[in-house]
Length: 481
Image (cartoon, rainbow, N blue to C red; front, side, top):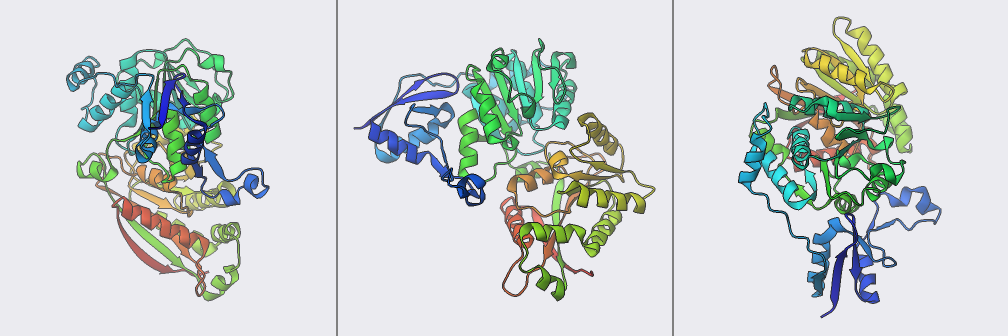
C-alpha cells in the first residue's frame, strides 16, 4: 500500500512525506479554479492560469487545517495515512464548560449552541466556526478569550467592528482597559492582554510584532482579502490557538479551502432558520420588487455593459423617485444600502433629507469615522423612525442594530456573502419590533430573449433566499421615466 506520512512543521503547516508521483496527485487534488478567473488581468495577460494551488510539491507543505481533506484523498485511493505528529483533540467536557462559564458571572443567558461552539473550539484548538448573524459570535469569542487567558489578537475587517467588539466585551463584564484598539493612525505596540484590530492595520507589520500572540481570532473572516489574510496568518505560525468566525461562506470551494487551511475545519453551529424558530432572531420576510422599464429603455440598454447598465439605473429619475417614496412610506427604522457613494448614495441621502425634515436621516460611507458610525448606530437604537443611508461596505456586515424594522437593497448584487450579511442587519430582536422586512429592488431591462445583467443578479438572490428558507414574494411595478 502506498504511504502518505504527515509531520507537524509549526502551528500552520504540515510536511508531507510521499513518493514524487503521489505528490503530483496531491497537487492536483488541492488545485481549484478561482471563480471569475477568466475576467482577471493576470489570466488575460497569460501570467496566471486561473488556479489556486493549496499544496506545493516542491516544499511538500500543506496547511494543517486541511486534515479532513487529506484523509478523504487517501481513503478514496486506498493510500495508507501515517500521522507522525499526534493531533488528538483536547479533553474538555460539558461539565468543565459549565463550571468555567459560572466563574465569569455573565449577565446574559448562555444558549446551548453557544456552549456547543465553545466546547468545539477548546477541544480542537483550531477551527472555522460558521455561525450566522445574531447567534452571538462576539460572545463565543469572549468565552474563548477568557478561557485561554493569554495574549490575544482579534482581527476584524472594519473600524466599526473594532469599536463594537470592545463594546461587546465590556457588556459581558470584561474591563475595556485590558483591550487595545488598532485601526488607522492608532499605536500598534501594546502590553494589554487583548488587541482588537482591522486586518488592514497589521498585514504589513514585521513578523516580530506577531510573536507574543498565543491566541488569534478572525471575526467576519470571509471579508479578509486572501493575500492579506495569508500574510497575517503566516506570521502567526507559532500561535497555538487560532479560530475563524463567519456567518457566511460564498459557496465556492476555493474560498472555503483557503479559510479552512488557515483556521481549521468548518464547524456549522446553527442556521438562521433555526435561530428564527427558537425566537432568538426576529421574524423575517422579503418583498422583491421588480421594476419594469419601457420598451424604448429596454432597447437602449440591450447592448450595454454591466457598468453602463448600473450607471443608467443609479441616474434614472423614475427609479430614484420610487426608492425615496418607498423609504418615506415605511414605518420604523429603515436601513437603505447602496453601492456607489457620490453618484447614488449621496443623491438618495440629499433627496430623503429634504423629503423627511421631521425624521432623522443619517449618511454612512467609508469616509465616516468608526466612532461616528457607532454613535449613529446607538442613536438609531433609541429611535423608531430613523433612516440610515449606508454603503454596503460599511453597514452590510457585523453592525448590530436590534431596533431595525426595514432594509432596502437599492443597488443590485449577486454576492451571496454581501446579501446574507446585509439581511443579518435586520434579524436582531428589539423591544419595539415584531419583524423585519427586506425590500429587494430589482430591474427588468430585458429585451426579447436577452436578460439584463442586474436581473440575472436578482435571480441569483432569489435562489439564495429559497436555499435559506426565507419567506419571499415577488411584485412587479411598471416604472415611469
